[in-house]
Image (cartoon, rainbow, N blue to C red; front, side, top):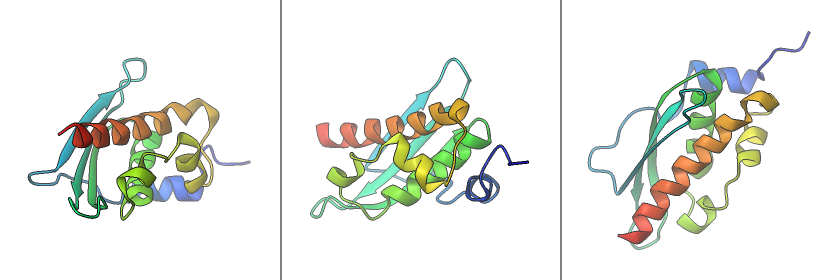
Amino acid sequence: MKSFYSKKTLQHFRNPQNFGQIEKPDALAEIGNVVCGDVMKIYLKINPKTKIIEDIKFETYGCAAAIATSSGLTVLAKGKTIDKALKITKDDVAKYLEYLPPIKMHCSVLAVDALKKALNSYLKQ
């Protein structure tokens, strides 16, 4: 019988990467899903000259998929330019995690939306 989550998804849930806060972030976004109750915060440190995301952290209140997609998203975005990070999709996050059940794809949407909200707030500064 196949597990509901992939091994990689479970690894990111049990041992999330880039979890926590950034003191004095260059950008911060909080987003939530009223239907499932998941809430995510994304913190960014961006090099002002290169526009590269030098550090990214998250805090997520939610299910295993919400935590895993938050963690996976930070791995995908760290070290990328703002332009490249803005092109990350929900499918990129699911592919990185090696499988995300269709009923949990909204978690990858939430993660990507939080990143885009943080980046867009940075660009408006």
